[in-house]
Image (cartoon, helix red, strand yellow):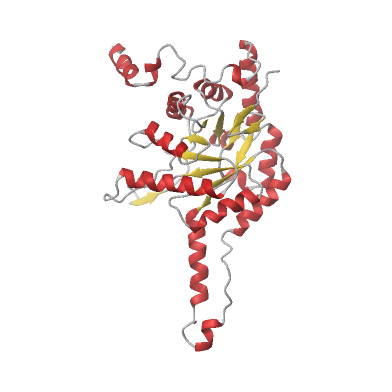
Length: 328
């Protein structure tokens, strides 16, 4: 039986299949089922910066009501520290006691703020690593790319300085120089990069003249973008790479491993097929390895990365031109 173990950010995973942050991780039973099905690790659903800031604002607002009516009211309420989404931290603590495989806490951050304390709390609650989700839709035309990137790099550096566990950064593909920002993220302290964030886009219903928001599952075709950049960055940056988006089968996992990934995140495939699909994916990986004589993932990981293939331009524009000119 081939060995499916892999090392991601210094953490040993029994399988490269990692359950990505999703609604699946809102129930401890689901997380236990993922462990039993053979998942290497699981990313807990995100703690959003807006949640912390909103709860802080609501508490401050409540404490200030009526405080200016009587002189004695100014000292009526004792000073207390806002606990923030304590329920989330307590839930992580409960989950940690229920399972043994690695848990990765997720922080959805847009800027440096006093919420950094929650990174430490997630660490104390038993998370083996953190995943920073740098999701932000930049709509201010006066903001430059340099300003936006600096803000993200400050978030990475600040979080890394507050915790001892490894920190992965989940990136968007929409950088002018993807390779350069990836390198800067590593220099800021990222131990791993997750490629890529999958944005949920609104649409407009012309019949009702309203904006519609909804969840759509990924498709296997979507894995081409992360695969390309995993292959390009593999061997170039000093961080472990994880692929996300469009991973639906064991062969999809194998493709990303061949490109150079250390781990692969999946969520849509499990929401569609059920949590036991993890076992199916692991079996497909093992069968593929067995037929080719590979005893471990390291035997073939990165074999088709850009730095190791005979035609490195296959991942760049030259191949695009070749394909267009070959069509009749």
